[in-house]
Each structure stands twice: as structure tokens, then as C-alpha cells.
Length: 153
Image 1 (spheres, rainbow, N blue to C red):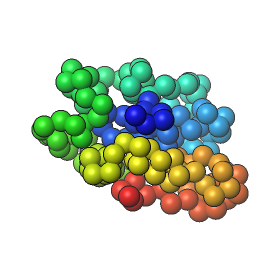
Image 2 (tube, rainbow, N blue to C red):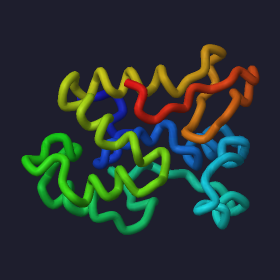
Image 3 (cartoon, rainbow, N blue to C red):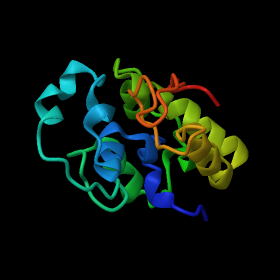
């Protein structure tokens, strides 16, 4: 099993690149700066530790999480109905980071969780070693322009 499966949401999101999680882990609000306006109400709130949706429903009520847990799935790629209507709606809801869910799950199905987790960890770490996140434009440590493409696999 993957070294930190808790960073893989049931829907295929890589929680290790979540802007809120990285902002908390790095104690750096720069990760929140370019997030969609939908999240404005949270950008100035106290940053809280998030263990990821596998351990806690930090992101609130989630139909995908509930369904996967009820079916005892590690992630939605294991489901016979993949990709289902619920997952497609989430993937296509206009939130840029959600648009990577189905491609991520297809990659997991094709190459396995270990490959996916290793790839994501490398993709969301700057060459200088700093953690990056979904909406970060430039590395907060070395200012290098970030490749925060969500579908790049």
C-alpha cells in the first residue's frame, strides 16, 4: 500500500497539494492567495490541520466519500460504476482542482497507487524542495513559476 494513502481522497484528489493543507503545514498563507473566490470566506480564517477525507470529513459532507466508504473502496477507481454520475459532476463542476479527479483515478487504475502517490509528491514539490499547491503561482521559497496543471500525468 502507498506510503501515505491518507493523502489520496476517494475522488482522486491528491490532498498533499491542497492549498489549505499546504498553507497550514508550511505556515504560509501565500498558498491561499489565488484560490477561487468561492473560498474567500476561508482565506482569512484560522488555518486548521486537515488529516484528509480518509480520516475526517474536513471538507464537509461528501457524496463521493460516503459512497466509497459504504462500498469499502480505497478510491473510486475500484468501483464497477467508475466513473459514475456523482464523480463526473464533481470533476466537471468548474473548480480547477476538481478537474483532475477522473484523470487521476484513471492513472491509479492503470499504474497503481504507489506510482500515483510518488508522481504527485514529485509534481507538487518545487526543485528547491518547497511544497507547492493547487493555486500557487510561484514557489514561496525560490519564486520559480509553478506548473500547477491539474491534469498533467
